Length: 254
Image (cartoon, rainbow, N blue to C red; front, top):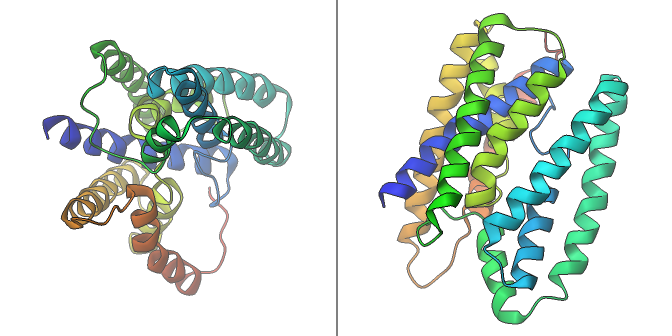
C-alpha cells in the first residue's frame, strides 16, 4: 500500500508537470505528454516484454527511452507545428507495432500486459532496481521541471528530453494514465486566470494527485468487477473536458 501511495504522488507530480511544459513550450493548450508517442512506446515495450517473458516495466523503460531520444533528435530540426504532427504520426507507427506484438503474445502474458497497460498503482512485486531507476529518472525530470518553472525558457531540447524522463519514470511502472496531463493544467488556468507558472504548477499537482487518489479508491472498492485506473480516470475527467469546452474559448498559451 505504501508503494501505491508513493506512485500516486509521483504520477500526480509527473503527469501535470509534463503537460504544462509541453503546452508552454508549444504555446498550445492541446499539448500532452503522450503527443510525442510516449504512451505508444510504453505499450510497445510492455507488449514486447510480455511476449518474451520479461518484466513489463523493463520493456517499457527500454522502448520509452529509445522513443524519447528519437523524439529529441527530431525536436531539434522541426518547428512546433511540424513536431506535433511528427509526434502523432510517430505514436501511431509505434502503436501499430505494439498491436502486432500484443496479438502474438500468449493469453496468460497478454492478460498481465493489459492489466499493466490499463494502469495499476499496485506496483509491488517488481525487482528493486526497477524502482531505483524510476526514482532516478523522476529526480532528474523533477529538477528540470523546477528549472523550467523558475526560468520559463523557450523551446529547448534539454527540457524536452528531461520532461520525457519525468513521465517515463511513472508510466513504465504503473502503465498509462490518460487525461491528467491534458485536462488538469487547462482546468487550473480557467479557475485561476492569469496565475503565475509556479501557482499553476502547484495547483495542477494537488488536483492531479487528488484525482488519482479518488480514482484508485473507486477501483479498489469495485470488488468482483475490474476497473482499470486509466478507463476510470477518463470517465471522471470527461465532465471536466466538457467544462473546459463550454467555459472558455480556445486560447493561445503564452
